[in-house]
Length: 333
Image (cartoon, rainbow, N blue to C red; front, side, top):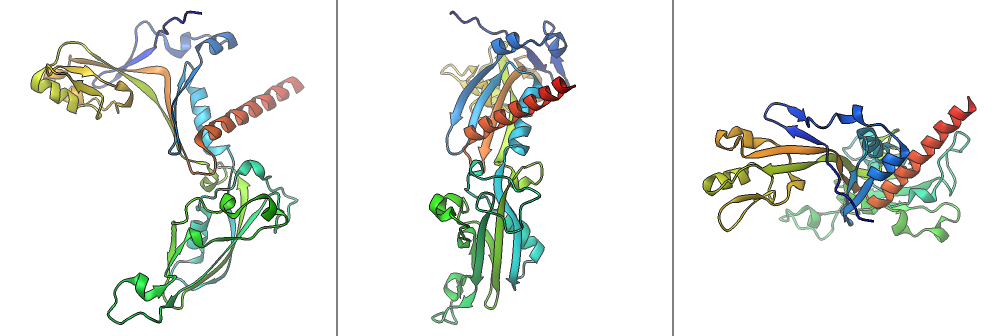
């Protein structure tokens, strides 16, 4: 089947306002049907690696795009430290600050393998819904440390407490199912505290499954954002010094200069849409700036427990579950 080119609804960015396309009546003119939604919906993956996921969501309402963003932030579960039992803390960090820092340590444990705690759950938890860790560190002075040494690493032993000092305490048959590297902290070099001789930490940590809507520490993403696709059109030829000035008005890589020192649009996708070009009267009419109002560029960066593409798929599952629950309530009435 031959594909027809999609007419893009544009929002024009003038110097002091955003103007709608005269031929586009916006969302008020769109009649929602499932058939139209399926026809318009497009998802294009631009980048998917360890650093993050970037994809285009095309042909949907802003409410749907924002729903996916909020679901990834607040409704996709993860494992995080919930309770901190402090048996000894002689460091300069207060107990409540230390407990807060422990709760923000990202864990590698896959939340899909664990259950939520219920009101009937015991405080100790079970192997199905709880992970337990301990942190025992005591700082001391090295016996071979000289009086003329100034490097703390040469003078003190265990004077820096890192996330790698956490020790996993398997519950039940967890040791047969998981490895320590599969449930421990994602990064071992997160600095928790600095100690001096005589300072000691003795903690027991309990991690559970939770949602970002309850606390930000349970959010599986570091960032989940979207923006509208920029569109830049050069209306007339811009050459020489004006071409280089025009290039400086946009983000790096957006405007290119050819061998004739003439400006052209190289890649409008990553422009920040700052509208700096309107600061220069000689360039006011040189370009037309716009955004495609139903083309969303999503950027998702995972904390590390789940890959970004898995987080998006889990968000879709959560949305489907919410829709089914809503339909069931309507049918029940």
